[in-house]
Amino acid sequence: MEDGRRSASEIGRQINLSPAAAKRRIDRLEQLGVITGYRAELDHTKLGSTIDAFVELRFEGSTQVDDIDRAFSGLAELVQGFTIAGDPDALVRLRVGDLSHLKRVIDQIRRSGRIVGTKTLIVLGTTTGSA
Image 1 (cartoon, rainbow, N blue to C red):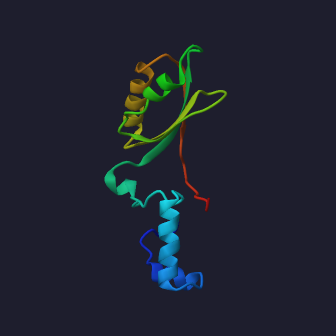
Image 2 (cartoon, helix red, strand yellow):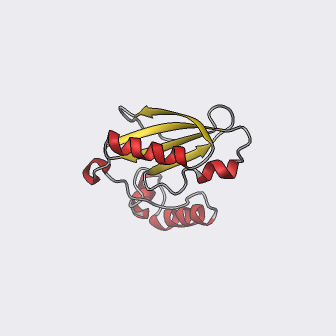
């Protein structure tokens, strides 16, 4: 999880397996769907996206879950979106360049469906876990 580019030889050394045995285990985890892919991590500040925000979305009571997903699924600024049980109905993580950009995206979301309320939380810092 720490480095998807790490070689089977290096992983094998860390867990006391031969490179071939480590490679077989990695291949098996991929086949079982435990390892679902590898990705690059980007420094978004260098790409001009400096603000992360979470937006809570509340919809009219008769709104279907699939309609909730459609309210944000096509956004270029979308990092993650969750439909959730309880209040609010959805939680969306956005990455934008500045506060004006954030305002435009929130306005776009509000126009997209039967949204009755939003609450925006701007991220000040980030800590990652090992899970």
